[in-house]
Image 1 (cartoon, rainbow, N blue to C red):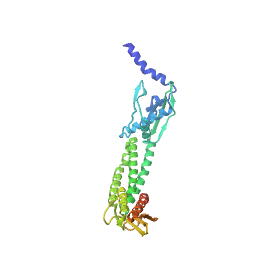
Image 2: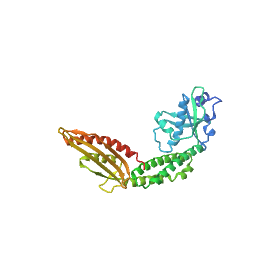
Image 3: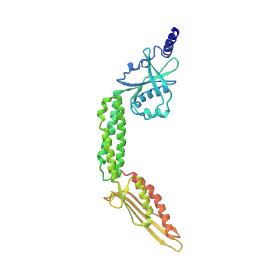
Image 4: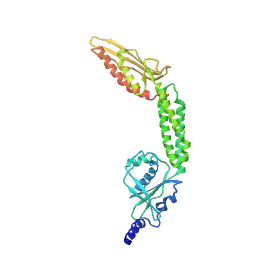
Length: 333
């Protein structure tokens, strides 16, 4: 029995006596005294190099956030803090992927590091810490900036005479509000008293969602065509607009898509020729044009007139489709 007690004391004392000399920083052996949890969020990492120790210290901080909120990455490293003879140490279960490390580092701001310390066995220790007050100020600044932009977009686009442009802007606002909500969750983790300050963010997110749905219902378009032989261009236009979320109706749409194509036909002894003049306009109901495609094409010829027209329309559709989509997506207001 006596032998077992001596062996137990030896195994507890031996690693610490070898690992840490008298000049070891106190933040290794007594981290929470040097950096009190009420003021700091801290993580102690160790490794074969300063870079490895730094990454593991950051991972501990990320675990503080990710174990309180639902973790967004699968962390395969776990640490358990233990105290022996009044000294703090850590046990570690392997391992973590580099991608998880990169993702979790993006979750927090204001991290600073103590200078690395190397013990007699060559193990490097790094302490990462976040000052709660300083980090909270960073989060609050980012939240306020994001919400100021969000509220500005919402005020200008909640109702609009151009619902397609409004929906695009409102989606930007939703991304900003979601970013602010994420920052607010982190801020509350740092200081729970800040929760009341950000309590209105979910309601604003709900307003944005309602505004998007309201404007989407007004994204109606009526297509008119001057020559039924060019119906393939009407079908191409329909496909583009549906992909962008428009609803096609027979008449009275918020938008009009006017497809006007003149086919100048000639017949010679050997060929039938056609020269298209294209004017396709996408406009608001009040007549303000938003997208316009105009082009005079060269002569297309074939022994059969319908085949000549078919060749012309295929060329027009190829040119028109890419140009129309690019112009449509550049609409701002």
